[in-house]
Image 1: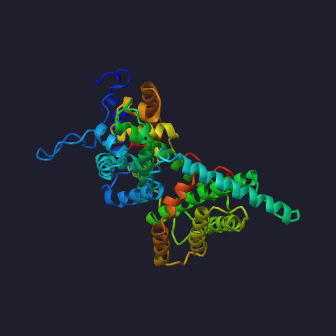
Image 2: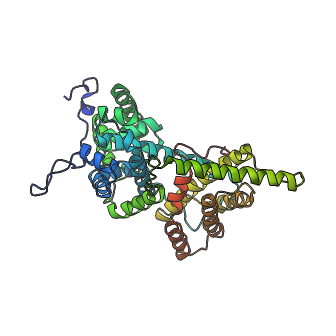
Length: 214
Length: 207
């Protein structure tokens, strides 16, 4: 069992580790030696545009994956990733190296994503209040009893913090330490939120427990 | 099915939650680079340390001209009651209102673009576009609208909102596509995001 997860029930104690961005691993053995983040940062701060692009290339996949999981929409994800890197380049001089650069970027990405989701949520609430809402040629989608669809809705209904931790840990494979640094919380808080998120999801999908046809 | 099996099913299904497509690297980088070019000021080298007297002389000359100008103005022009003054407080109020409006417009356009990609997900009220359009016009007509960058953004936004406000259930897909392209080609979203400070959200007026 992984250290620190002993308190979890057995089936939950082996977190899923999918799709980690192959930044250092799985590299082409003939490729040139990768440049370290510290060196890239120095070059970016010195005004080297090639270094900006190299830093972007090294981290964009992981950031995009995470942001897309939160956004669920390509346009939104692209917008938020762009905003993440623009902010990161602007604030790079403030990066003190207390965490990995990828973690720092993910913390900006999560901040941008959560802020974007809040804006959209508030705007949707405002939209509902308007009386003369007109559809623009679309009809509501039929309810889908499929587990994946129900799960997606249940994840979207999770409180913001639970959703962020669930997506980062169970979907994208971040560790609690990485999540803690990215979201500015203790790893223990991350574990507790994940535990509650899973409980809420089990509760929301409890009727599937009796379905033997899954 | 046991709870453990359900747990396994949930975890397996979660892997496909919002499964990301291939990273659109080049498309995103083009916009980031463009935004960076727009924000970064051209580096200027001002060798103040070499000839400080020249700058001091220029500053003194500018101050003298300004003082003479103010003096002439006070002597030659009779005091009058101005119809409109834009003191700092009004300028700040305008900026706040503009930021609120731009934040709401950003959220609205985000939803609009999402609705084009995922038909059936939600309904887009033309009323929202009309309401934003009215606010946009008020901001444009305000005497406090002196910032050329904000004016330009509001003018571009007005065009987009007007097009959306005219949509009806019978609108063709091509009309929607034209609006989407207009938003992208005018870089409306990045400019909106640049204009709205990080962390601000369209809270006012939201029930």
